[in-house]
Amino acid sequence: MRATRSGDGNLININTEGFIMSDLTRSAAWQALQTHQATIGKQTLREMFRSDPARFDKFSLRLDGLLLDYSKNLVTAETLDLLLKLARQARLEEWVARMYDGEKINGSEGRAVLHTALRAPRGSRITVDGRDVVPDVHRVLDQMRRFSDGVRDGSLRGHTGKPFRDVVNIGIGGSALGPLMVSEALKPYGSAQLAVHFVSNVDATDLAETTKRLDPETTLFIVSSKTFTTQETLANARSARAWLVDRLKSEEAVASHFAAISTNFGATSQFGIAPDNVFEFWDWVGGRYSVWSSIGLPVALYIGMDNFEQFLAGAHAMDRHFREAPLERNLPAIMGMLGIWYADFFGAASNAILPYDQYLQYFPAYLQQLEMESNGKRVNREGQEVDYATQMVVWGEPGTDGQHSFYQLIHQGTRLIPADFLAPVISHNPMGEHHAMLLANCFAQTEALMLGKTGGEARAELAAQGLGGEALEALLPYKVFPGNRPTNTLLFERLDPRTLGMLVALYEHKVFVQGVVLDINSFDQWGVELGKQLAGKLLPELQGKQPLSSHDASTNGLIKHYLAVSGK
Ligand code: G6Q
Image (cartoon, rainbow, N blue to C red; front, side, top):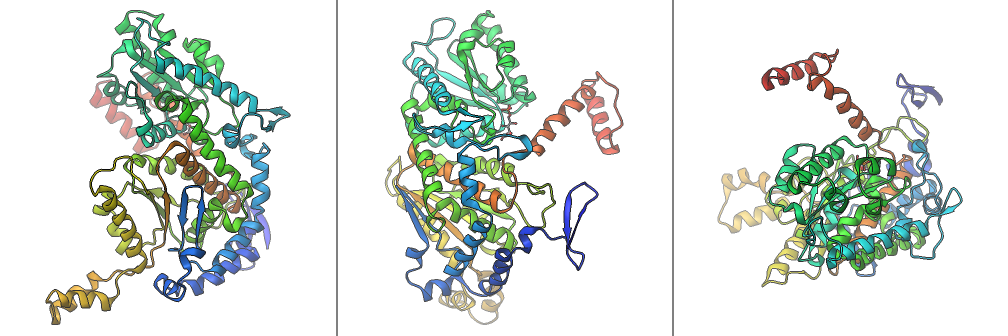
């Protein structure tokens, strides 16, 4: 084994056969899992359930109203033991403590990672650089309460004295997806007097279509941007401001119709937002982990601060569980390790998120950012290129719609796609047999994915339909389902604010587990930063303000085509 640098400047270890190997893949725990996979790979879930009737009891966990059934996974007690050995080898429990204690574990940005402090109860103590941040958190929560109460009860009004009826959040990425997903998920708790809208895309269509039906006199804009330098958000904010000033014929109207959420106070005041309407958060809150901070203001306005605090309390309950429960009974640890099991030992490239709850329609999109932006990395914490798979692609849609489109591939495609099924036991909309039908679909799918349909079963089914001989044999291969497709099922009593807080925190911590074990920094996002630089560089050329510089032939060709067709 020798250490050297690759052409990209990454440190790499090379084994005696010339293959690059990291400490992780050389480690005893990793190697043991690799050996074990060869035996598990030969077993089927069907057999595992047949030989162990207590499998559900062994491989399910409960926390408050939440049930995680992970028994339909390609695991035995030995697999879990080996997976948790890997987690312990990575010192997971120490890392959890380091995160909760405010250590600067986001190495490449030199920052603490303290979304857990955002839901810490009043009176607890968490320090960053010697400063207790909990009083700061609660000061901003109190400010959010005053503001959201005022808007909701009509004491805070627009420039012409009318109460607000619409809130438009202008922000993108971490400053949009969280509040959007949560507002949709908690619609049953939403105000009937106030609607929330989300504008994120710099495509003017987003803002134009949103403002089309809005009355400027009753519209409140919230500009959400941690840095307050994000091009898309500032462009949308400027255009929204122009729309308001033009319609109300008053520059002063901006003071009562605009609020901002940012860590950059200089920039918010430069934009003209009244200091009382600026809500702070801190650099130890990552964008995709920020829905618990003032970034959640649109949610608080919509569902009220009491409900928002229930959302925080649910997350705090999960924080405590994550920190205190032994790994064997720890939901985020188990879910995180199962993900690594499939990504790294079965070569699974994607992970489907399938909520059987219409209110969770944006949950897959939210997790896409949370997981892929956090762990979609290719070098470890020491700057070495990794020799193992990191984040799987996350995707999904609410059931049962997905069943009528892409489930085909999960059942019969050539790829192994582990999937999470999420469903409420009690619906917010009890209507006839709908909910029983919904859950029947959910349970039937995980069962079918697990069992599959053998050649013998398919043959018997075709025979029962009156088919035989060559016609039956010709159809048979298409009717066989290999099964053995792993799934988790998360059942919760009802999708209320507390439960949603628990669910989101569960996935946040799952991401953390995977980051620690895979030895990557889950809290930076240089790929996103790159996008921010690139568009800024190219814009003057599209505006014809700068001569076309030397891009590659394709990019030059596209720019020239745009300039020619648009007549710029
Ligand atoms: C999140 C990312 C990214 C970020 C947006 C918006 O973790 O860093 O999605 O939230 O780029 O950034 P601002 O909030 O700074 O506008």
